[in-house]
Length: 365
Picture 1 (cartoon, one colour):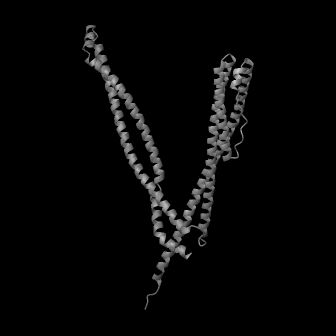
Picture 2: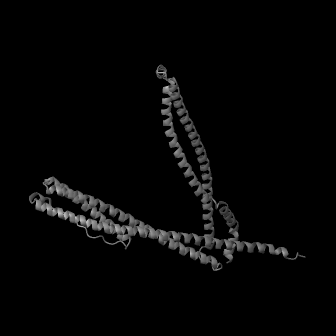
Picture 3: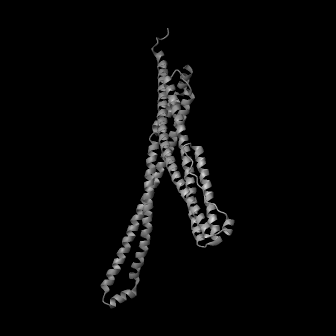
């Protein structure tokens, strides 16, 4: 008790300084978050007005050409005068001039708005920079306060049972959070592996459909080339299926909740057989085998889709649980800090009272 009390007395000034910094900078984090949203909004507005300026610039160029055409065209003016339509020419020329100057004015206003937004963003970025300094100051002060308290209160402190209780709660909350974090990362990895497996299955189906297409051509006299292309597509499908099963096995090692997929057999023939025993009947029989492979892939696809949906649901649930544990950990840490602050205040107060006591003693003779 005496050792801890002495350390608390020695650390009291530093504790007060750090608490003062935290109090001064508590506003910084939420203010910074709001400032970033404000700057994002300014950036969106600036992007919109800059696109508008580009459009107006093109429109101004077009209007200027029309205006210049009527303003500088002696021949047009002369033709209108000969036809007795001078007033019509003047009206047209005036309209083109008005249209040009209207676009010019609108572009000018847009550019003024752009400059105003740039100025606002520049000032907002300065505020953000200042807030970032305050957030860093708050974070550093909090870390130093944590280190200060840990150096004094780490481990059992029988003289302060309320601190021990809060510390145990914090350790339990930290362990629960870590466990939930591991669960989230595990389920996320399972989702990734099953997603990749699903992609391989999709590829296998594409190659199987390709093989069926070549097989149909083979039945109608496609010859050796069709056979070779059919076998090539089936080999690719087999490779994708092999990768699919490998990825599912990896996912099973990550989580016992991942189950085996239905067995899939990709039809495989013999190229020599196709050369020496190639007829319509063998081609039809092999075509049916490829269709059986496709049916097997369909079954595996349905099973894998269900398992992937379940894995995504587990990940979402694990994430929600982790967030709950994170909130509990924050609360536990706050309670631990408050308990330690109360001890600091009590010890510092007792120390002040003990220094003030001699003032009531009678003066020496």
